[in-house]
Amino acid sequence: MTHGGAYATPLSIRMLKSKSGICRDGYHHRILWTHPDDCSVWVLAMKTFRDLSDDYKTSLEYRELRHETKVQYDYHITILVQHFGRTSLSLIAPLYAKKAYDKWCERGVSFANHLMSVARIIFNHGVRMEYVSTNPFDKVKKRNTQSRKVVWTSEDVQQFLSVAYSDFNTRNIGLIAQMAYEWCQRLGDMRLLTWDAIHFDKMTVHIEQSKRRAEVFLPISEELCDMLKQQEEDFGFQEYVAPRPYPIDGVYKPYSMYKLPKHARKVMDDAGLSSELQLRDLRRTGTTEMVDAGVSIGQIMSVTGHANPQSVKPYMKHTYDSANYALTKRRNHGS
Image (cartoon, rainbow, N blue to C red; front, top):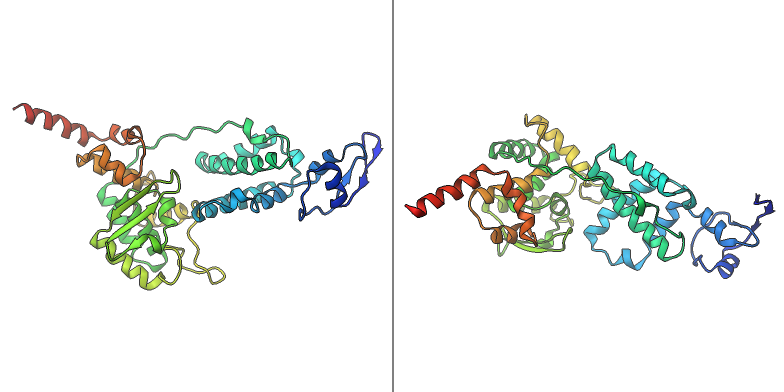
């Protein structure tokens, strides 16, 4: 093997580490070749994305992540490894990263943005450990996701739940949807909700939101409590409140953030709902209903976990009932 007219020399990991200072004990290289005058270049050329992602998962940064966050990261890392395979890190330049991102966007901009966020985290780890000199994804610009304004009607919600709860295989999808709707929470937090968050004695749920680390304490309605008690009889022996209804290697795992909408779509089709509706709209639907009911922004924030009143205002822009309520209240006050 040659490079620049000179023969490359095979070195052991220990020899290479002592000369370059950038390899660590336990790091797996099947074959290591290096130029006699510049071993570091060839070390980088032989490292793969799979190696880097494996190394990241041994880092303190990863180990200190919350369990729910690890589950999400692991899902994205699996997809990233499937995409890059054993591609050498030296080949993943900004243009290569941009093409990968564009490919992911074919499955949805939000999906692509999540993947790129995790890819950036992994490559930042590589930069800190001096496995790579730069992060190729730093120069890739995320596309903006279009703000959705779609809300479900109460009839849509009831029809969906009726169909979902009619089949044991889709019951947990219905429960996730009902919790997201009643508590105005993100699907990600509901699909990863664990039994230790449910307090039947106080009829409350304690949710630690994964996105902004906000904590909310919410009441459990009698109807939802009945569902949860039935759920506890069937699934209380394992960690998650509403996991996939079939075990994998004896373990009941949560729905992935991309498989859940896919399975929910089948339920929505069976319920005869519009193709415009998406399961993630349920948080917006519940929040919009609070606006329509005249609930104050501060009270809404105590439910949704928003830290900034500005974050609640988008829900107020597309509700005629709220505007009508305000103007009617104004007229009545002056009369």
